Image 1 (spheres, one colour):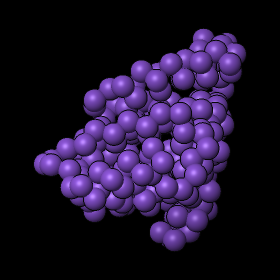
Image 2: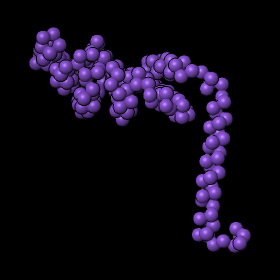
Image 3: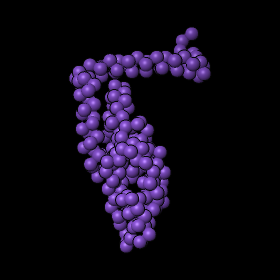
Image 4: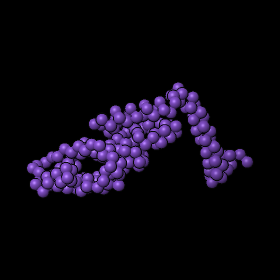
Length: 193
């Protein structure tokens, strides 16, 4: 029987597997072609160094590219994805402004020491959410930089009372109004003993 004489259902049953087969062939051909690109002549170590330089440069950006550059390198091809996801160090510079991406970066950084920052002031509610996100990882925070309101200070200080054995640098920018004496004393007692 010819294809034209098939019922709609029969044609669908015949076309779907054929279409899947051709998609697989096209995917294999594209993969082969891409594997011959000049970039694939670079050793993994060189690519990872390029990715790391991009990550450090992007993290200083004030634009959304501080996230997207690292995300894009993990989406170019299967080799770049394998390298990016396998290199925990690439994900250790974490902007906490986007908690969804920060959570993903914390997962991808595995147990590596992380540098986390919040470059703009956060409300007390957002600070609490950020602190909840960071608390399980406090043992591996190497640098923490926050811009906080005095009303958020107590939440932040309560988190900082937990051990942070890898902490090398803590930068706090305190905003909005006079500091209440009780909070100032709490900061003094926790940070300076």
